[in-house]
Image 1 (cartoon, rainbow, N blue to C red):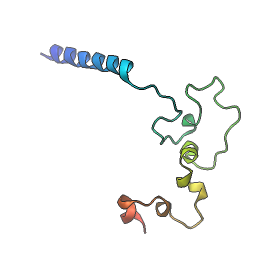
Image 2: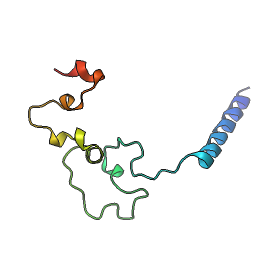
Image 3: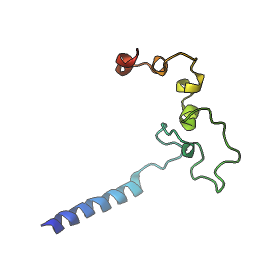
Image 4: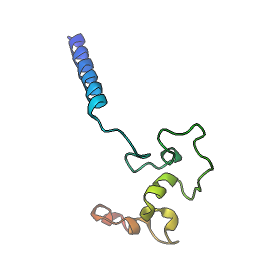
Length: 97
């Protein structure tokens, strides 16, 4: 019985691989989700052999995120302000104190 379940799941997997290979759109941007935080998401896709010509300036723990979303960059936040004041939104109102 288990072998039939395993075989059926393998067929579903192979069908999914084929369908994705034939019909999925190609990724044309460096960070397809837009929320990458580390430097791996700041290089081009595919990355060149040397990764970076020069090391980009790092001003926070998440340089790629700050590059793609400068309006949420912590480095631009004045001293004494809460990051949640800058982000806002209905789901975060209870966290602001």
